[in-house]
Length: 139
Image 1 (spheres, rainbow, N blue to C red):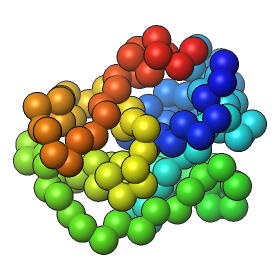
Image 2 (image 1 turned 120 degrees about the horizontal axis):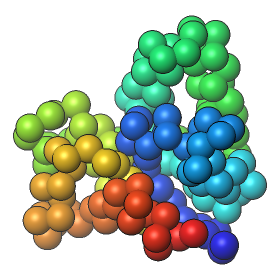
Image 3 (image 1 turned 45 degrees about the vertical axis):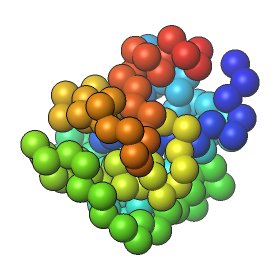
Image 4 (image 1 turned 60 degrees about the vertical axis):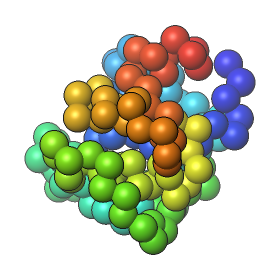
């Protein structure tokens, strides 16, 4: 697989799905580790990742994972200067959309149905992919 330069934003549900050692999607996380994939995150996204991981594992695991993301060379910290508010059903999801736009990401990966509205929006265009679509296109 050659995904060099592929810049993605991962919704929290996708991050959780790819980090487990026995996950069938672990190869995605391994591509990040190897520098074949660039994970784009904002402060808000990092905080959500940490909160959800702490809830599902432990505070220590969540802190260690957050620290890893902060220092990893293929995780790009993105400053979001504008909030587009493209998702109205669950406004908390907009942090991922705004990050994808600010980062000029190749794609935003989410299985959350609230994101489906992005497929109807012409501008700003966000390439929304479900996890199966991402796997189909990039594996």
